[in-house]
Image 1 (cartoon, rainbow, N blue to C red):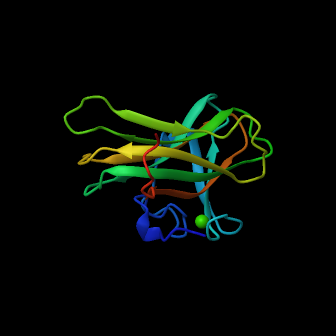
Image 2 (tube, rainbow, N blue to C red; image 1 turned 135 degrees about the vertical axis):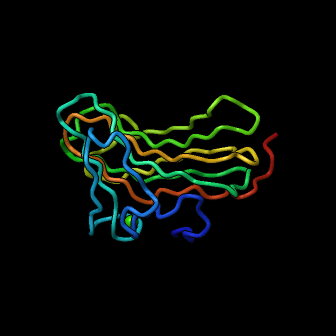
Image 3 (cartoon, helix red, strand yellow; image 1 turned 90 degrees about the vertical axis):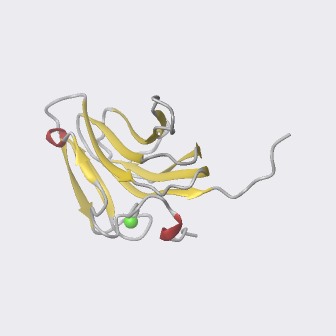
Length: 167
Ligand SMILES: [Ca+2]
């Protein structure tokens, strides 16, 4: 079932190596922890707990992916779980990159459906058409908090199988 970790551009997207490769941003707006049991991809997962003091705070973990990055079609996927008491704007996972010879950063983001059930893992997916030679790529995991927390696991970006062109 699980894709080989080596196939993913995202490193340690399953958090089995703790917070390696990840970095908290907007550090004054929340805290993170690596939880030991109950992940959906392996056992460990990331928990982001936004600060309750600065609604609507934006708190995030990010990963910078450096070249060489092969262009092509990718499937970006993340598993997200809201706590029962999470009350805020939906969390969001995002990939962004700046194509070579362009000043315009491209953002691809996806969030859980409005009816996502708290306490259950939801799989988020996006198709990404990555140009060749992007100088770098960022993956962001955002929460916009007031209360509660959000869990993340199984963050990956793998080359999509080559499909026949649609007519
Ligand atoms: Ca995991």
